Image (cartoon, rainbow, N blue to C red; front, side, top):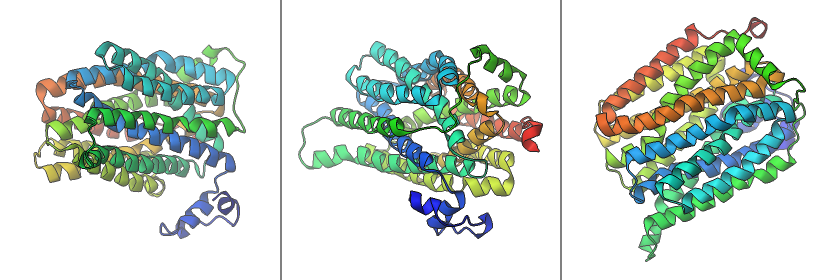
Length: 424
């Protein structure tokens, strides 16, 4: 694959056929270091994609209720708040690679521990630790891609990593959902939660494989600043773009955090789907995310980056409000699949916009600030969503979240402005 990318001449965007992936790869000409990072991201995202698909169902089988699940997921994102800013300072001072390696070592280990200690206090404590470890990935992921790509192929790089990772986690999630039924048919005496625990441990080990690839990775322009850590924050405070981007991204992330952790719970408790059916829906949602992620680059090229992002956010909000109006399983499933596609399409665009509007030396600091804002707001949003779903039901909450998504879409095209030197 690397030889294919390095040989041959780049084909113009207008002549690329989506039926010819070789032409697509030749067009963007990704480096060897990018492909090393791609493999690390692939294993890490695939492992934790399976893990987070199954973990809330694992808690349900251990008789946790929505309120407790909301507290545990809220603790997970709250743990990010405690570590995100220090992680950004460490990445700024020592470089992205050491912080990334720490994440890839600690996060899978915590994932295993969360399956072994299942009392509520232990779950909350380990969720805090897991959130602290996982936030390191967000701090390192964005500047790593920015360093390994150029302006003309960065959006495609984000889309490719997002899409392929979600595709592999789709297959793993479908396997994880159907495995208990297959084992029961073969006469296995293991309980469902015991099978799920084994799958969760295997998913953590799969994520740990990423460490081997990250160890080989060399970031060519890994920026290490000798300035005082506060210098990076002073730059952020003086950037009008970041002062608008960070809260807007935090609100969008809060909307996602209020819905996604409860999606499988909604399918179980409201639509009364079995685990195997939920696995099928999960597989389909991952497949539509895979396909939609691959078309984000031409979408943003056609509409413009900010208008393309806003379009996906507007459709996401509309789908959530439509989901509130239906109780038919098939219709609700289709709407959920469409929601999965459109909210996923916005992510590569938002992160590309962040890296595009931030100087190279400040990217790790900007990434940590964004992750801090996301975690700070999302931790409360997840916990409050659990209470809201329990007290007001799914329909009213879906309408509220849909209105938030529409408001963010409007602000994306009316409030955000890239720095003039970038626009030029």
